Length: 179
Image 1: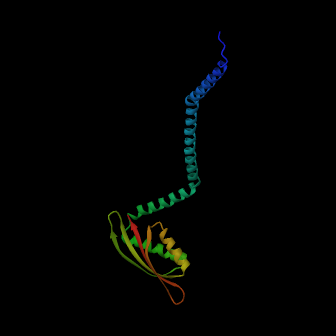
Image 2: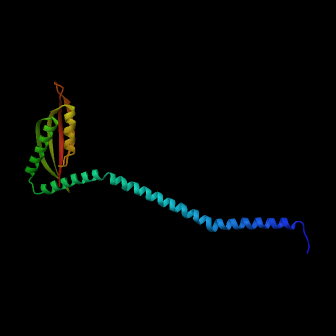
Image 3: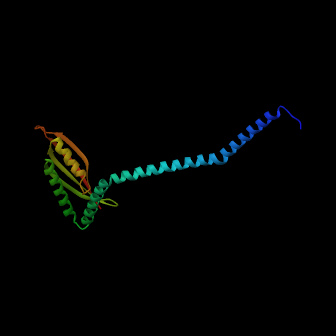
């Protein structure tokens, strides 16, 4: 047998080369797919956490949603009742609502003038002109009552001027939608 003094060094280099090749193979075959799968699972977990937060926020708003649904069901029931009501009865209900709102807010109604019913394609609309006298706080509350009424009233135009005694003279143009 021939003894070569470089033979142990060559053996060391081959061992190191075999180790590097084994490491690369292990990384490509085992570790890389595991890392990719881990990242995919983390992404799925993040998506599920976001969905969970969204659902829990809906659950925390359950009372508000139920209140909104209850108000909406009142509007729908009022609309179904209104389909059997004549135009004059509908105007009377609206005038009654405006008078009640004025009393609640401290607004003095000077006049209420109805206009003819306009028939659109899917709905009907009639306009009411209201002249009133009020302070600013009462006017704001009155408009709030109108805009949030279950009768689908909307203030289309408002003209405000001041009187000599410090009160506001207001002319409102209110529209009501009827289906």
